[in-house]
Length: 115
Length: 113
Image (cartoon, rainbow over all chains, first blue to last red; front, side, top):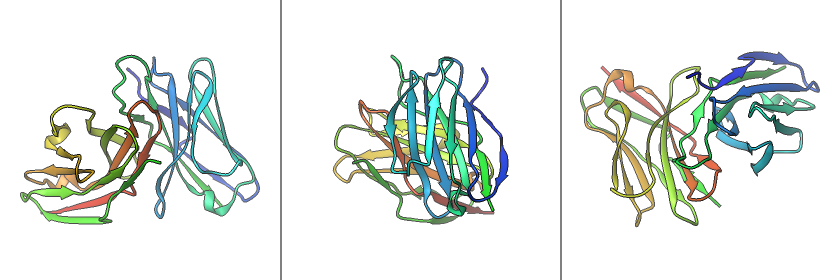
């Protein structure tokens, strides 16, 4: 069974640009959560999508957005990039259905550097 | 609101000695508690969880954790540390019935040979 796949793994952008990151969850998983990981702030919750709808949201500005498609794949977008957006962006999937006991399955992340 | 505290940025232990990584939590409902491990340049891997039942839960790689409701703690333990256990460890909490998992800041474990 394939794991969570995130693309791209590494990318470099300049301030003011926008970026789109992609996440394919484990087959059969319908929930996708996004996290931002930085050395100073740890792992911060961005949002969670289930059945193409955002179900939970963290405390990030509106520049951070996401969506989920009918095949459960998810994308997140960051517009008007700032230097502080440099981070490892992690995607995690879970089944969120009967028998779901709560653990998340993580991808290896997309490392974004903003210059 | 949910929150998780890992009071130690770093824990140092000698190989063969027992290790403890501390975690306390705050949640309004019944907690689902988790530990994850992260190796360099990798995503997080699930280690163990407490949902209900026995307060002592066992997980991967010989790790275990003890749920203490009165102290709202969920400390990670291992009887005998290995050098290969050196990594970044995250405690996490999810409010039972919810689907938002909140993580602590992480504790870096160094196991010295």
